[in-house]
Image (cartoon, rainbow, N blue to C red):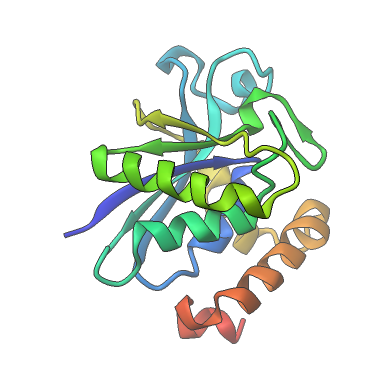
Length: 180
């Protein structure tokens, strides 16, 4: 039986591209969470005033990949010590947040952050919140990196992150993604 995990860690294009490669993750959808349906669109979210974060929602098989490993991967994909910012992406929509879907995920996220804090020189600012309504992003945002690898943001920012991610987690990635 599959479960959901929802992460906000900056631009959803990078997070989506990485998690789409993970064994046991059957679906990754970029979207928005934290605001209202009236503001669940890219133009509004970009203002930073909607309450939404750019998120990715994963459907995963916990028999193949644990929630704890997904947390580890998530923390490798972004800087959990910067508030409302990832690189040049600035605003509350780019915050670091784990949206939990049940009590087990809540406890796992709390324990994970507590166990990782000693490894960072600055405080971890990743918020943990109960998942609310997920609003899928516009179609052109889905699978963005795979469809636009030569776009400058993808080529210069996402591709190097994916290479590092692939190196770190190669034993947990789908075989076909290792040959791309």
